[in-house]
Image (cartoon, rainbow, N blue to C red; front, top):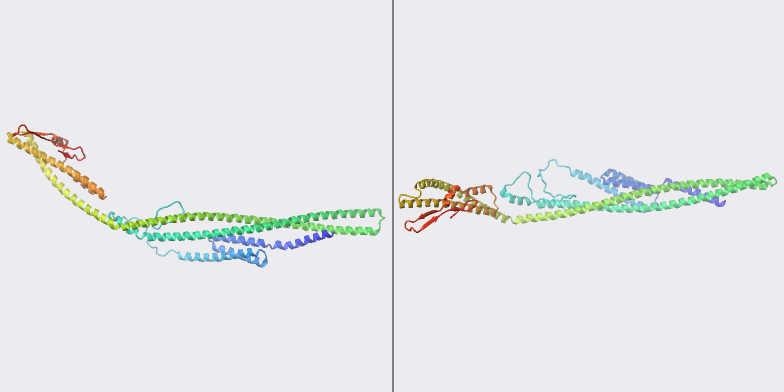
Amino acid sequence: MTRLGSLLLAGLLFVVTSAPAQSDDPSETFLKAYMTAQQGEKLERDNQFTRALAKYRLAGSLLEELKKTHSDWQPAIVEYRSRKVSESILRVQSKSGTQQDLAATNAPPAEAQPSPPQSTEPTVEIGPNKSKPSIIVQPAGQASPAPKTRDTVVEAAAPAPATNDTAIKNATRKLREKVEQLEAELHQSRSKVSEVEEEKEKLNSKLKESNSKLEQAQQELEKTKGAEKNVRGQLAEAQGSLKKIQETGNGDAKAQEALKGEIAQLKKALTVAEQGRATAEKERDSQNAKLADANSQIAKISKERDDAMGQLVGLKDSEHRVAVLLAENTELKEKLATAEQTVREVSEDKPKKEQELADATKQLEDLRAQLEASQKQNKDFEVEVASLRSQLEDTSSQLEKAKLTGANADETAKITRENQILRNIVVRERQEEARREQAKKLMLAEFDKLKIKSDTLNEQVALLAQPVTKLTDEELALLRQPVISISDESPNTVKASFTYAKPSTGNQPGE
């Protein structure tokens, strides 16, 4: 009986002491403050600094309240979380002020400066596009004259390296700032994961403690039920003994009174045992509720840890993208250095190129003078050929009449001599055509050597190379017929001559 009463008294004291703890649990307050701080960090990442600042301040007030009400509950963790929240509040206040300053500074000016339609600054892209930065600046829609193209390119390319260098430096600075920001976020996420792991371990230890208390309460409940069953058995035996004594009527009154007193004590002990059982059941239910609450907190912490791990993986992907950006930036710097070297080489070769251009221009002027002289000579040849053609027609008619025979030997010799002179004139004209054709080829070869491309010059040269008088096939066949003459002084001597044309495009004559 004494042991049963001590057990019931211990159960009542445990219930009384655990009731205030449930109503004011410091772990719940800390969890609420932690979740509020996480919401503030999410709002901060979304650049909602006003709402993030409100969340941080709410989390700070909850932690301050926890310090005041439960100063002995995990003071190191509470102090660490309070310091992190204070740093977040200062950081968000600074970002909010910086954002307002940037909004005021980056306002568009009233008068826009005129700018060319195409920008010459190189751009850094995260994509597969790897275009070369342009170093030649020329506004769209403005075509430079052909003879001055090289000078225009060199003069326009001079200020390009400084502009591209500035753009590369700005892009590099932005990339470094992005890398520093990502490294800070990565460090913060890793520390957050470690904090979540620590809190999870603490909750697991708390869960184990609750499970042990629940098992202990369950054992006490079983013991209380056994004691109650024993008391009920003793009460039934005492009531049976009292009933037998009353039925026999031969017992003394003292024994009956003793049995009645024992029955009353047993009933009282039974009542106390029932109360202890009810108290133990309440304690069990309370421990079950705490266990469910701890499981819920563990689930939240696990979810938070998974979210933090997801953020950590995202930050690793961001680090990879930043590495790609840095590689592209390095490649752009190398291309810029190559372009600057090209500009310097072009600038160094400028005097030599100018001299070559001056020589080519001088040669072009000489060729134009030769072309004009050839045109003038061609006109003279046309007049001469026209005169010779009329003479040839007259002579041909006379030859047709004379048939190469005259009235006497002297006349025949004169006719033959005149025919020979006319043939020689035509042959010289054909030779002059061949010479002009050869000069045309040499001139075109010189044009190719000097890299001169002019349709006008080519047309004029082709015009000068054309024959002044184009002979027909019949006339050419007449020239190819041999002329045979017998000398009157030397009858044994025979002289023959004939003219033929080479099989070529210009029909160059040969003799």
